[in-house]
Image 1 (tube, rainbow, N blue to C red):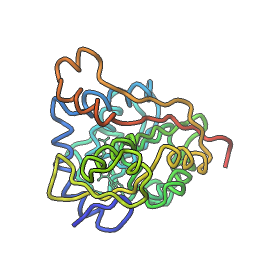
Image 2: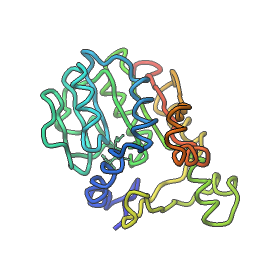
Image 3: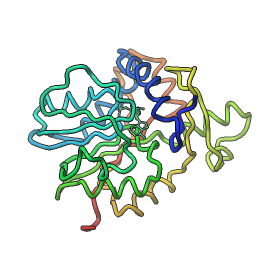
Image 4: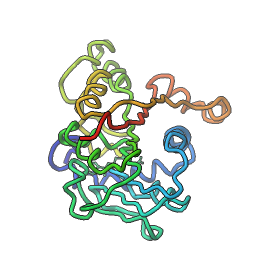
Amino acid sequence: MTAHDHGQNSSRAWQALTTDYEQARAREDSLDRLVEWPAERTMLGDVTGRSILDLGCGNGGKLAELVLEGAAASAGVDIAGNFIASPPPGAELIQGDLSEPDALPELSGRTFDRILFLQSFGYAKDPVRTLRSARALLNQDGFILLTRTQPLRYAVERAEQNGTTVGEEYFARADYTYRPSWNEQIPLTKRTYTMSDLLNVFSAAGLWIESADEPHLDAETARRYPHKQAWMNKYLGILIFKLRPVAPL
Ligand SMILES: C[S@@+](CC[C@H](N)C(=O)[O-])C[C@H]1O[C@@H](n2cnc3c(N)ncnc32)[C@H](O)[C@@H]1O
């Protein structure tokens, strides 16, 4: 069983993977805890009274946190459906595919102030179509917060594995299968992408980048977790984008 980022079996594979992913994420020294979630949270800003749609929400823990901080009625969607047992009132967790969110019956007639793709956008079957569909669910003045792994990270990893160069791997077009450190039993298959691929997807979906961030460990955290700093020095981490519609659809 393989979890393709754009193929079948993803649901079944992710059902098996999410428990391990969430366990890894919950560790005191996880990069999600030390770098990613704090940076995502900062770019999201004040959520008081804002409705949020979290696409590929994992167990729904991040959405629950936002609702407890004062977000308005919100929803999370994840294909695995392994959700926290008691989400707070106002945090609806839906098992479903993020590929075409405006076609999900549970979201019919709803719109949101903030739409999140936190390390989940790579699983969209047709990325431009998915962003356009998400855009249709945005309220006026709303924005999309989207994170993706820095593509150089996979290029460095593949260059090490294959004895090639970073440039060769960065521009290689073949899918890339790897075993995540948090579950080596179930391989994940990724479509390779470059920075220009990513930026062109935003443009094709009619979105502009209001701001971008490449979060890293602060000096104190780097001293406390030198193994994480070593990992970041090699693989760089994630990119965060705040995206807004260019003009009405
Ligand atoms: C790397 S995890 C990120 C989870 C969470 N957003 C976070 O930031 O911690 C990727 C998530 O995407 C979900 N996923 C994968 N393919 C999906 C799909 N086609 N539709 C909805 N969710 C999907 C997985 O089940 C998993 O929970």
